[in-house]
Length: 286
Length: 89
Image (cartoon, rainbow over all chains, first blue to last red; front, side, top):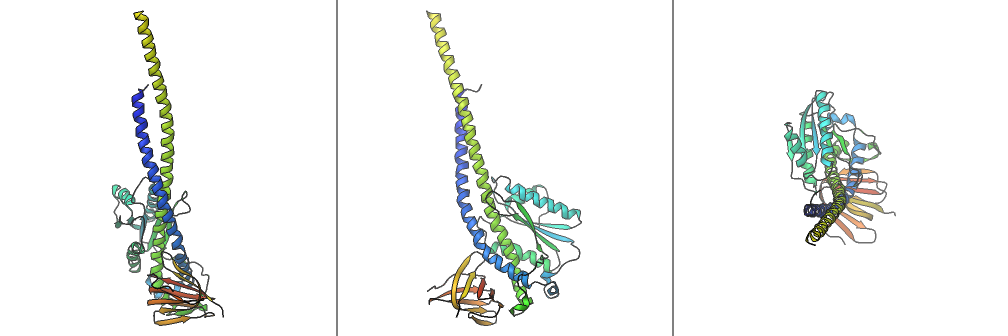
């Protein structure tokens, strides 16, 4: 049985850990609040823009707009994988990386060359360790992603697609359903997924023309998809971290309880033994 | 005469949402004015200020640089690129 003093030291150490995880939980909670607000604030723009783009979009415009081209065969694809810069968020990063690896393997099995674009230090660390060739990486995107971050990510991918260098672009990020539920999700950015428009373009006076409007709006649309992904990912990260740290805090509490019982037992045993020794000594003297 | 339901939205947030008597926006090829009962209309925006004349008087001004304006059934949505209020009231 460990000595009472050793157990006491363990208890103090676990208490320190609990202090830290509790603080991290509180920090994540307050960041989660702000991140959730940003997700909600970004929604109206996103919805309005998707609505307009999907209603104007028609396959025959591909003749004028290279961004609308639909390659018959995908020879080369780009994966944009977003992860967090920091860990201690449970399975958050692991889930995203697994999703990315599965897509990577699936595409390779189909004979597609894959460019990996990584946003976030965790994904970069993993694929670098595995020795995967990495087309580009970003680790400077903060907890508060900006539209400019999204532009810099989406712009070069769009240009490569327009130039015919790549034939498909996939985006992997966490879907922010709630703080507790943040599953990874793969979405195809390009070629654009045709969707039924809510309004027909004929009903509108268009200025300049449908093609002209789309030429300007599709880059915004793609950027906005990336922006939404970054914002949702940031919120999901905080949610996952809060959950992970709450569990860690609870576990530390349980551990302290258990150790305290062990400590009391050890202390009791020590006292009993001391009494026995004193009694034994007194008998020997008497 | 009815009123317009106007929303001015940037990628990050909703800048303005409310009723307006009219609105003037800098379209890509010159300014356009929107009054209630306007035909369905979709135009790219250039650079300049969107002026919203509020129903109870007063106006709000939002600088835009690119984006799009959509009018449908007295619902006006302005999707702006850069958006800050310069001088409300």
